[in-house]
Amino acid sequence: MSDLLNPTLGNAPYDVMRVRQDFPILTRLVHEKKGRAGKPLVYLDNGASAQKPRAVIDAMSHLLENDYANVHRGVHFLSQRSTDLYEAVRDKVAKFLNAPSRENIVFTRNATEAFNLLANSWGGRFLKAGDAVIISWMEHHANIVPWQLLRDRIGITIKVVPVLDDGSLDMAAYEAMLTPEVKLVSITHASNVLGTVNPAARIARLAHAKGILVAFDGSQAAVHQPVDVQSIDADFYVFTGHKLYGPTGIGVLYGRKELLDKMPPWQGGGDMISTVSFENTTYREAPYRFEAGTPAIVEGIGLGAAIDYVSALGMSAIQAHEQRLLAYATHRLSEIEGLRIIGTAPDKAAIISFTMDGIHPHDIGTLLDRGGVAVRVGRHCAEPLMDRFGVGATARASFGLYNTEAEVDVLVEAVQACKAFFG
Amino acid sequence: MFDDLRDLYQEVILDHGKNPRNFGRPAAFNRTARGDNPMCGDKIAIYLTVGEDGTIQDLHFDGRGCAISQASASLMTEILRGKSMKEAEALFGYFHDMCTKDEDEQGDHGPLDEDATDKLAVLSGVREFPMRVKCATLAWHTMNAALHGEATTSTENASF
Image (cartoon, rainbow over all chains, first blue to last red):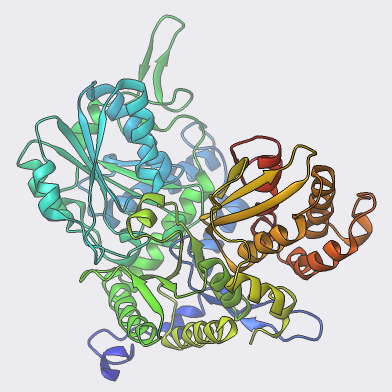
């Protein structure tokens, strides 16, 4: 066990203490006050948003200080420079997802906007009243509400795949749901609450056998493990930059080219057009026709730097490190009497949701925070899932590439102190 | 580890949080409202019996929430029994100010029952925890909605 848990042993040495030095914020203390020493930050809210390495911060500053101008417009030196740097990020994203081409990559504001794009553009064009979209019980609101808006507008139906007691997707129920009226399956690759990693390739294979398209929400999965959109055979794949150690304001929709090519624009404006007259406007090819207006240039550069950063560490090495943390944290937390882990599927990303007998998650959150430990408490933008497990809320520790076993120990100690406090 | 949290979680709060008074839906009541804090998942219902003279003859609550919200609701049910609607509104105004404003910025809410304000003082610690203010005030907002014949209220309403 101890060999398994020690990141310096095993096949891939992963020097987490060295990695931590890349993240300036991790050296700060929290709750420092006159007459009171601060607590070292133990940041376990990576599922909500991850901290940024120096490389990302520097890349954005460097752009602003040296290379910044609007993209896709000017003939001048800086505009060309800015355009080259920004468009190079599209190549980086394509490589990160193992997409066939840079033209599979649409930049959005975040994962939520990617789903709204998909629902409005693809859904608005190819779905009609009576068609169905399958989602699952473990979806983030970002992959629920856009489909409900579309349902209210054009009369599609939404079918929801149940979740088993251990937090796994009910694959038997899923298979039975693949009926002729279903046109799209839109399911999370990994649950932000349960940590469950869904069998994406199998989900896609079963859907494709019936001629149904598949979209995945990779907001959590793309952060915790290597993702290969071709190997899982995704038609669409969504993720967001800020959970991948990049900045806010930039997300990605991957789409198969022949699908993107048939999809109409969903927002109009500059940058997405070929020619404009008052009588008739023609649009650029995909992916550019989905990117109206000046994009998030600086944030795009930040995302590129984040992808460079995690790729240099290696997504497999990150995954192995986080899986060791997950095993250790699960083991330690399970020993605490009265603590219930919500989500115990065999294949999990490094996310642990839990409740404690007689202590509300909100109180857990406040107490842990005083111990320097940042966790998320509440419904995690997944209210139906909370209802499914009969809890109003949970506390959630979500781990990232810079977390350590020592931090798990601080978490466990804080949880135990919390129990004593309310005991 | 949590010494300075004793300001927030005073013994009275821990006691009311664990053993809430007047908890559960009563057989009879004539006004009710539900309150919802969608950010943390807290839900509460208040059941009032208001007499013809406008006196709160009885009040109960149920629902689930953190120690702060349960204790606040429990204390409120003790404090408001026998109070007039006007007194209840004044105490709500006082309590809301106490949770959200520094002492020198708190408004004048007229003459108030000192026993009531003494009891409420145990919750003044939430002022230092802005994220927790809504936990403390949810029950009072819900009571106010019930008094005024509104069926629901939410911490995401502008009035919070």
